[in-house]
Image 1: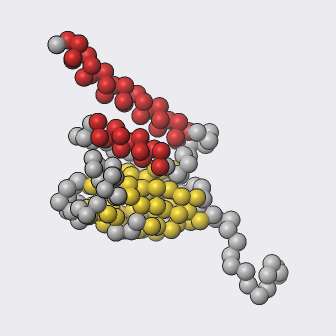
Image 2 (image 1 turned 90 degrees about the vertical axis):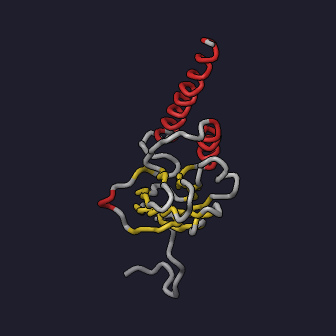
Image 3 (image 1 turned 45 degrees about the horizontal axis):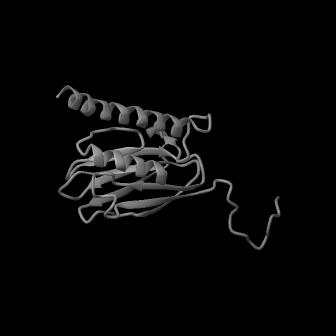
Length: 173
């Protein structure tokens, strides 16, 4: 009995420690406090709001989103379903690792700046600052939802991307 109790309490502690290490590595990997997907944004600096509905057919209403590097976006996630959904921003690897943890501990409640967990009929927000160009994945990591395809992709256009060529070319006045 004692051995079983030790096993049951050590697994969550080990998972918690592993996720803390992964989170620290992901948010401080470049030495500047921003992860590969960006950083938490400040509400006062929001440049636009994007509304995303989450439904029980395991889909996001906006599975493909385009933003610009340097932009701070408020994502308003509305749960239009009858079961809990969430919107979690991350790299594919981060999302897969987090989903594996959610499968092992389905009742886990968590709150991080890169995600929002929303009860049926409710709305939540994520404010995110996109610091790098490239792509940012997002998904619902509630057990079964990710496997059912509740995923999306944010394309972050480079702030330095040249505007479409015009008849004047690079001529400056």
